[in-house]
Image (cartoon, rainbow over all chains, first blue to last red):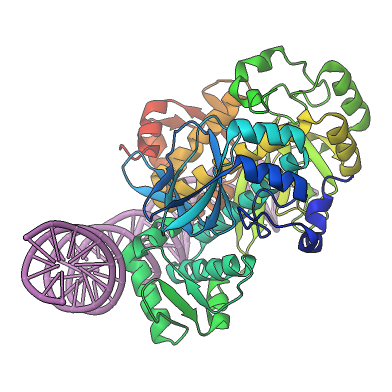
Amino acid sequence: MNPFDAVRSPEALATVPVCDRCGSRIAGLCQPLDSAALDEVSSESQQTSLTAHSMVFREGDPAGRIFTLVEGFAKLTRLLPDGKQQVVGFRFAGDVIGYTTLPTYPFDAELLTDSRICRLERGQLDALLRRYPVLERRMLDLCVQELTATQEQLVTVGRRSAEARVAAFLLSLVEASRRRGKPCTVLEMPMTRADIADFLGLTLETVSRSLTAFRKRGWIREPVHHRVEMVNLRAVSDLAEGLS
Amino acid sequence: MNPFDAVRSPEALATVPVCDRCGSRIAGLCQPLDSAALDEVSSESQQTSLTAHSMVFREGDPAGRIFTLVEGFAKLTRLLPDGKQQVVGFRFAGDVIGYTTLPTYPFDAELLTDSRICRLERGQLDALLRRYPVLERRMLDLCVQELTATQEQLVTVGRRSAEARVAAFLLSLVEASRRRGKPCTVLEMPMTRADIADFLGLTLETVSRSLTAFRKRGWIREPVHHRVEMVNLRAVSDLAEGLS
DNA sequence: CGTTTGTTTGATCTGAGTCAAATAAAGTGG
DNA sequence: CCACTTTATTTGACTCAGATCAAACAAACG
């Protein structure tokens, strides 16, 4: 009855059926739907595999589709008038990409790795929204979540030192991994130093220097390219909090 | 029919009845309601006058109410672990404050001036949402708007020089004034240099120096305290865009 | 009218940007 | 599979925008 219950009782999610297309018990759009509804969504949505560096959509494209990232990593970027890019966020398996009430997408979405994405046409989405009003609430929840995360990011970029920003970024990777149900200390990190820098409002050299410093202090390891191991999570989070 | 139409046709807003309590043809929550619905909301909402520096709510308070700022100015802030504050946004007459699907407010809301606010209990809001499903869509629209603005702010704070940030801030005041239907070159600016600095990720000294520089270049004037006159809007917006 | 709070301005310092060059890794086509 | 190109990362030297520290001034306030 109370439309806020969905958020108040996250433990209820465990009982929700999982969309076999989107695999999205985690964070996807379909989370609040029952099995019948899931079948309908499944039958209307298209799943595709795309290679790294594909554009899911571009800033300014008519926002005609909504996507769930089933497998892989993506970055969301805006192009500045002076040609530089600002990364406004990263997306992980289970995340929804491209839901907006605006007529066009407000940023580029580019895949960082080979990925599978689940695609839903806006017309179909509208029909689903009419049939399952709970979905509209779901979209609002996702939007609030994203807004809160963006405000958090604003604090990080606005007030923290370079190393603290990089530390906060590493923690956000840990958090994203936890959300996907893999609370593991070895994390995929498919973004380049330049991507991270554009996300944090730094230069790629400064990001590199910070990560090198963390490595030398024994806080992290990079066993292979595009993978970090968090050795001393405590030290990293203290630095991120500014308690250095 | 199409739930996105509300956003696609902003010109339709002119025909929407105005909430006499909230005065919110501009941006308020009640915008999409018809007269009958407005009467119901009016009878259930409370209007109060509050003095400058009152807290509308604090970060972490149970999010039991939603507010419309009828008259006045507010700032939204988050407190960092190290005690510094980040201003995540300013709010103007007509804006909604405190709508969230989270169980608690994610930031402080403090009034900058004597203000009138319209208050709605969450239980009443839930009832309204059930009765007027269009309101849920409205909340989603507002959330998307806010998200877009916050991402914009992220770009400003992450990538622009100090003067460009201050210029962008001034432009956002102009834009907010325009949204309230007063496209005027003399603007209320009730926030202190420290507030602006905390919003832009700068120090108050740097904000002061930037504004002084703009004044010396004849781009702005400050006829009285807490009021700016935009003399050369073009110069300011060129600087904000980084075309300086 | 004294006190508090906000603003301006100056002098100095420093964290992160810039420029540059050396590796290292990942593609790519023969 | 290997030479060759391209792209990503690291490291060093130098610079500068903006922070910090400090003090004078102005406005608001009780």
